[in-house]
Length: 156
Image: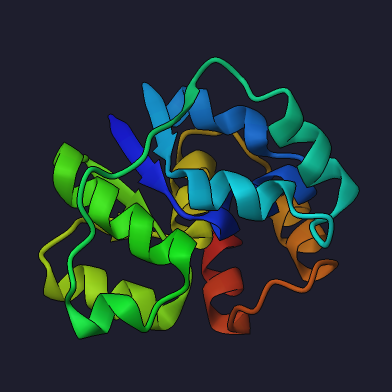
């Protein structure tokens, strides 16, 4: 399965020490340059900047050839907007997005999506991640997620 990702899922997988699961779940991840820029931003956590400075072989960066002038897309940040455009262009298997507004736009465009919690859920089902450890580490970050979703991860 090939995916296109926005910044958040990759960033938080790095921060909680679970980025290693990505090649177990995907044949590759494509990000637009805007997402690479966000990951490398001086305001990003040091671990994230270090990770993107030497990206793994399963990660590739590709500029979307065209970005729609759709006003809904124009309201999103560049990383989200370009990830949606790239997912459409590549007919990706899965778009990785966490931002609620971006998810609504992607759904309206018929794109298959999941976010960080969905990725962790798949990884927990496949015994690639310990749910309790992942939830504990995620709660220690500034990732905004409902307790209900995190409790769902702990059901295994």
